[in-house]
Length: 103
Image 1 (cartoon, one colour):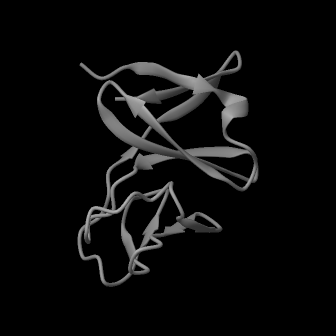
Image 2: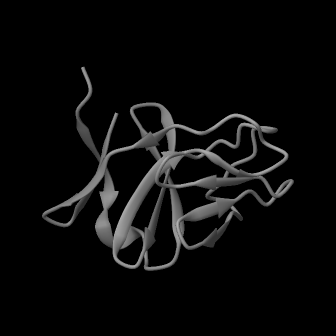
């Protein structure tokens, strides 16, 4: 059954940045853009590179530093090749200063 788990503090993710977390064994990236949190798989579907480590944010998209694959942080859909498979996205919330992801 899915539920929210605390992965860190809300302040761990500054505005305009992305950070990696472990959510019950799942590698999750969380970004904060215009005050909104986005949670998604930290693993690029193209070659398995980490998205949070070196990934570049542009609006609600993240681009992998390895080969430039782009993904929507809202839907997980591919926005730029070479990736062809979307990434999972997760519910995320700030609960009394704790950053929680739905897994």
